[in-house]
Amino acid sequence: MPPIQKGSTVLVTGANGFIGSHIVDQLLQLDYKVRGTVRTEAKGKWVQDFFDNKYGQGKLELVVVPAMGVKGAFDDAVKGCEGVVHVATNISFSKNPNEVIPDVINGVTHTLDAANKEPSVKRFVFTSSSTAATNPIPNKEFNVDQSSWNQYAIDKAWADPPYTEADRAWNVYGASKTQGEQAVWKYVKENNPHFECNTILPNANFGPILDKSQDASTAGWIRDIFTKGFAPQLEQIPPQWFVNVQDTARLHVAALIDADIKNERVFAYAEPFNWNDALAAMRKARPDSEVPEDRKDNSRDLSKILPQARAEEILKKNFGQDKFIGLEESIEANIQNL
Image (cartoon, rainbow, N blue to C red; front, side):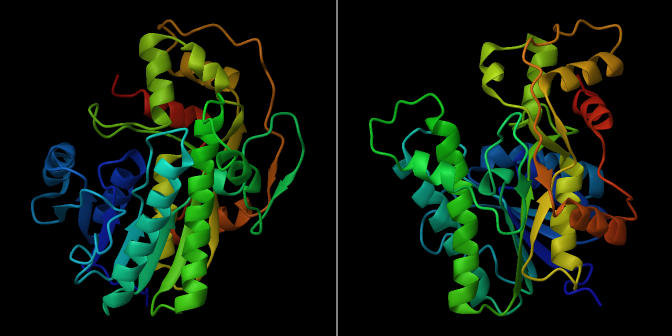
């Protein structure tokens, strides 16, 4: 029997975000009920309207949690839930670590505390990030495994001020995900909660954008290239791995319902790409449209993701899917509504 039965309620924090909304979608498809948190009623409007229209009213309930860093923020939201998926994070991309990292750690800790006080909770899943394991390093061969942590980002993020370096914001974000996930495992070790805990580490997420008004995160890169051209700031994004957001969502759901996934870091990496790969996929998807020329830099991400096979095994077992969705299909879905 799965730890969480169909028809039970799962709390999804950050339900209006790109990944969060797809997790909601996958759960509702499988006949779970969802209680989602948003920071304001306005941010939740499209979410409620979209899923009420798709699945009918009464399947999704939204609650407002204005600030995840406040102690007790999720105590009421978690009541009666059997699963918790903590997706909400700080994406301000501030260069000041003091404005980001404590907020993320507090949000994780408060959500775990709320879950640990609620006897009904059986599973807790945390949305980590590939940046919790490593920064992308072009043209260098190295292995990523279950023990990989991004100490480089932590050191760079917490380096002495002034906070002005061009890559400081990315390292602050990476450090927040690294230290946020480390806080999860520290909590598990020290508090021995009554539920199982898993973390998901996705790389850049592409794939369908459910609503044009939402912040599409990394999928916004593809949308913006197609609608606005190749912005100079995108040159700063190095070659790395990607994953289809639907696969990311499915791995979250599997970490909730698969009894064999216990205290695992699940790595959501489909395949490596660079901008020329993405541009080629865009041309194939829309051969009659104007797509920017290839970039001069054709460097590659040569890292080997050793736990990738385990993630594919999870997708096959729980969803009958032999492998991750590929880049061309993901980018075609990314721009299908444009």
